[in-house]
Length: 619
Image 1 (cartoon, rainbow, N blue to C red):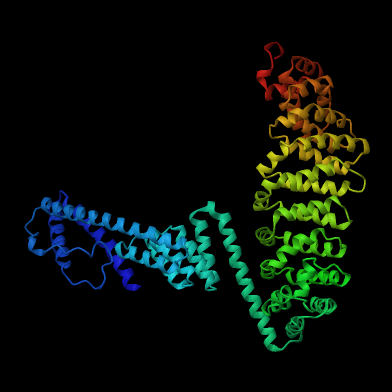
Image 2: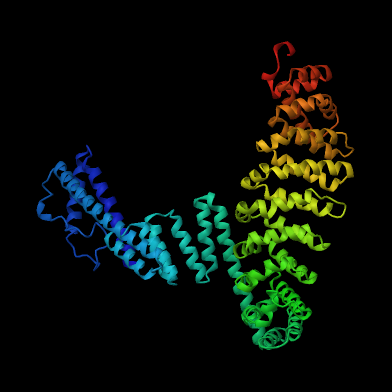
């Protein structure tokens, strides 16, 4: 490695030295020219010395040296420059040919890598480097292949060479960070990923995920070391977990045997050491591979004992995974777990449903857990079952289901997976709930509306809601029902959701604009200032989409109402009210005349917002 480094650095120094000689030979100073010729003569003579390396490694040392017999001592600067330029051209031609060969070998290496033939890929990349030692992609590609082969030190070495070719090479730092992580050199790995952010700040979000992975791996290693130390000391709590797992590994027992053992095990796991020893002693596979446990989790048997066993398993998993990222990851690698968790959300057995939702809620509370669940669970079925759970209230369960949905909505990947199935999984059940608001479900519906608002932050999802006919019909009916029954818990978040959705221009919104605005005119008489503000907000976003709605609200004295609101409302309401007035006065001469009569101060605000809408006579 040191030989390679010295050769490469020598190549760069030679290039710099020749450039300096040529520059001095062009000098108008005779003394500088004479000294340059002497230096050139010595330099060319030195090229005749034997090369240290056994293998040609640069384009410099592959050429026969210029011979001293050329008599450069007596050559003029012009002749010397001609010789040097001719030599540079020859080297350039040879380099182009070598680059072509190296590129072809790189492409063959990439093909082998794509086919997961990493040994062959390494060979092709190595052959390419034999042609051209300073081709950075060959180093980073070979490093990636070495990582696949578990040759992490070799990968790091290649990344270091890539950085000598290009000190800002992102791929080199990325692969080096991964290799250091595999070698459990956490600080070195962390430094690589942080260096990428330093070079390209735009990659901060991506590198944050890698840095999180480094932290998780470091925590896992620390947990396992501490747990094994406790076990080696013979601590009672540390030895109890493996003993219980050994008993639970016995096949062919009745459900109550496993149920009792799982309950005792849940009580025995009181800290991180217990959680880690469960993982280190194959606890996940012992439980998930048990035929009796598997049968109850998949609801193949629904007798009371099997249901109790199912509850015990879910409860244990929650205890084992609480606050333990590695255990959460391990649980999600079990196929039985991935299938059963989603399925049991709609279990008819209340205790099973509660424990299942509690487990999923645990995953939904932190970014790492959410991503694990999104990557491993059937998101479409999960959301469909959560909505089914919300639609059939069972006291606490529906609140937990809404919380899960709202937590997962924070993840962009979750929203992306929902886009294609949004109508069936979310919009249809949501619309049905809006059409059946009651005193018993108003609070959970209010929470659901907030969760829908989080989902609607995704542009595609927002567009789908804005163009759904049944949804907007349900909004109109829901506003009327809430106004009549005073379901304030529902109407406030619903108006906020409508404001956000109606920011998108849609023929569906235009179709229902008159009805929506009529409902909002009625809400302007509400005693709740928050409801009045949001009703004004709906007017300000819906009116621009419908001339008919504008005429309707003008006839409903909206100008006078907005002027009255502007005299005693807060900043948000003021913004909405001015926008509403601006839209109306821009579209209607009668609205402008009414505003002039009502309030000259407000008129000036509207003139500033929409000066083109005002005739000179009114200015």
